[in-house]
Length: 153
Length: 153
Image (cartoon, chains in turn cyan, red):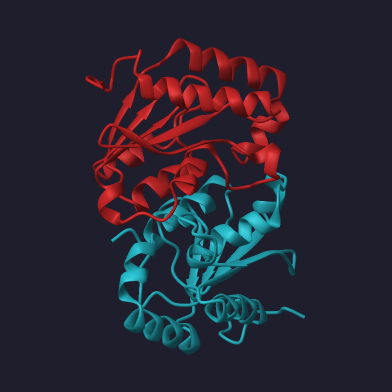
């Protein structure tokens, strides 16, 4: 059972990391995400910029998309896990659907819009998970141009 | 030629409206968008919640997605047209890609995150186009539940 969502050994973070690893194995950017509702994963995904030539399928967006059309009441009782601090676009999606809690693998390699989320009442926990940090550090050092494209730089 | 982008008879707004009408004819939510770079449409789209069972394909997101992977320098020289004031998600995408100028058909039926955009330096022009207003008024009155789902309510 899922007892404490902010432990670094969190099984849902492990699922988000598994998504990131799947993306990396596909030749993509290693960022993954899961949407959790009442202890159950209802959407999961990973960055698909490379795989689908996508400008919008960041990991969090892909998890939301794969979750399908859901009533507002589901989002407002859910937790979004992501291996990396959410960018402005993913932050906006979290705000649109009023997801109240975001658990972030790390924000060392990229600092997203955590302050905006908090200013709107979203709880943001950052785990600084060593595996997430290492995964992105290695990816960015090997693929700086692709990484910059993904964050609009 | 495209001489003054903030005239209500703007041909690019007309293209965004055409996208909205296409979406409506497909049974979808009538919101459309075009991304314009140096006087040329490089991405166009419409809301596909109904058509694709999508939680993320708002009109603006669809236009960005259909524009494909682009260098940061293209976005930062582009104008995004949308028939309706952009929600938090679409606002976040605009901020991610640092699109400097957004032209909005109307914000009477829905007020999006225009203030957030302006606070980050984005120019936002709202045309209050009668056709855009009427299109959304009619849609919302006929489909209140679907509309609420689209804006996370």
